[in-house]
Image 1 (cartoon, one colour):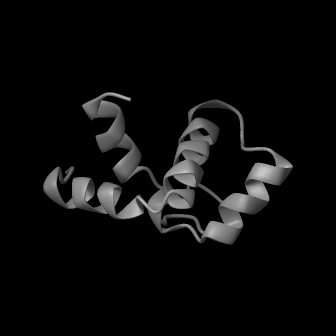
Image 2 (cartoon, rainbow, N blue to C red):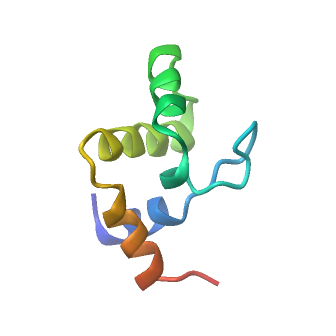
Length: 74
């Protein structure tokens, strides 16, 4: 994953549902586990959610929060 993709991932928000407007990094782990068993959405959102799942499972979500603070988007 390149720098631009990590910055985009750090700023990505959930576009629908109970957690609409939440940063993907702030989604509860149980929610991502549920999607993993059900199937992530198609397209870039699903790819981002799968990446966030892997990052959270490995305890690295703080890295994306740091990126979000360092590279704030308008």
